[in-house]
Image (cartoon, rainbow, N blue to C red):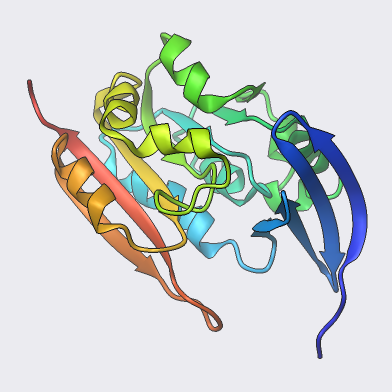
Length: 220
């Protein structure tokens, strides 16, 4: 039976309007009128992290771009060998909601000492930071062909992939969440990585999600 959503909170940010709403027992986040994420099923968000950790050699540090509803962070925290997790999230409201309404979906990870949350634009942050990570997981919009902020196109460009490589330890791995397949983006990854994998995550309802996974960067 269809249930109308109940709006929990709505706020204006520098990037537009963001809204948290509840439909039955699930939460949804709407950004500028476009569905962004929900708590229905976090399997693909968890696999985004799990597969990247498995593809890295002796991973100890994880970088997550996009906090979402907390599923990715919960997965990273559950791998005991991970010593440091950095989450970069552009919207302060999403961080606030993860500390309150959505805290169960990250399993309270925001309270853990090894978790550091940075409230800033990831695209700018990745060009300024000098940190390096074993695992990098990106889930900041709906994928390379369906961005919710135009500036995010830079992330999936050749320059964006090159900048991400500078953040990654040589034996590490990187993963991207996408709501649809993108052959052009896959070709772009193959310019820089020897190992490129496209993994399909099926759901009981709706279209599958896709995880782009890359490791073994090429030498230049």
